[in-house]
Length: 178
Image (tube, rainbow, N blue to C red; front, side, top):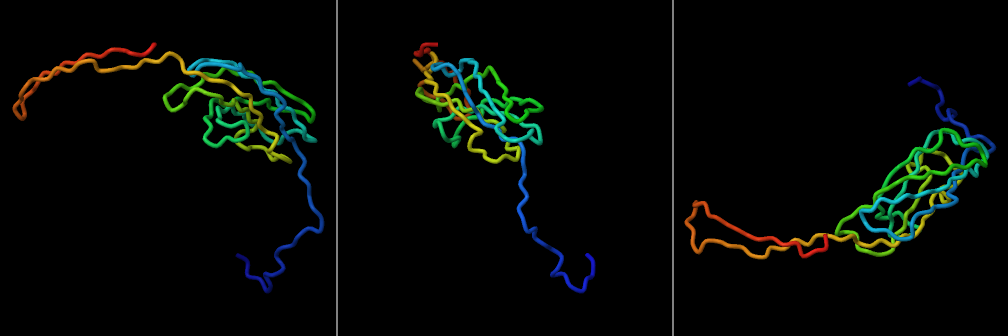
């Protein structure tokens, strides 16, 4: 801290705006199979263009999500992130093709989902707009054959004494299709 006579004159505001120019990434296309099964490995391709007026100022990564909606990532699952090129001139484009394994679990019912590609998924770049950074492709997902284990019988002794070891036997069968 500097002891000053008047601290009220230590700041100023410029009389005109300063515009930051830089890269502005925009998703142009996303392609993937129209149908697949949970747990299956598929290939997804997306194309990103720099619609800005200059090179992006830092490196960035793209993300691929599995979402319930074509226009929202709320509740989406991040499937992967992929490195983007180190430079991308204004008007330039790149294509990213990635293999991805779709998640499988009982929390995901069969139905229509969206594979959403997001350029600069970690918001590393300063851009004019972020609304053009994502695009989705629909995919109909079905459940693969799954096991369904069931206890068929259990045998227990008729009586037992507290603290005594008892012998239990049981049978299990797979009623599922896998």
